[in-house]
Length: 231
Image 1: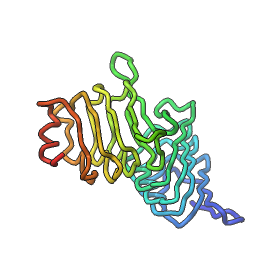
Image 2: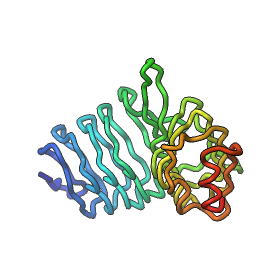
Image 3: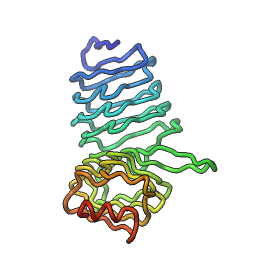
Image 4: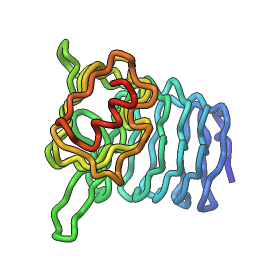
């Protein structure tokens, strides 16, 4: 159930384990019984901030998409599953904070969301989930360098970002569809590694700037895709 608070300034979500709901609201508070936020549950609202409380374990695809005034988001300690495009088109979102007690996700570099991935040998790697579209790197060159432990970039990860240059380490072996979509300021990507053939998604460079230049090793698996896309 959903209860409108007496002062009508926010929606209190309490009761029932899964929420699938959309309404023109500006603030949400999740009660302790809520564990699952469904696909597009709060898409196209008027949210300015989101706190995914400690009770919530899963957030579905595009759950908070199309919230154009969303500026900040915070993830609690127990979130384990994050869908695709959760904050899609939130062009003012400048940071995603994560509880220090969360063992699945973390934030680095002033608010960039990463997930942890542990190998069979016990070594822990990083998966880039979301680079907030409103986060602008310092310096005139607006460059973002992924950490050496990064192994993947999720779909829509840099969507609408204001970065001009991205440097990707050779540890990365997967880049999702639309990873750089609508990042109109992006003019160069440097990637010394390669993607295994089965991990190449045709839409990696969909909806990117016509000025984009991708610097990759010759004869890599990505080279054919870049030629096909005219990059």
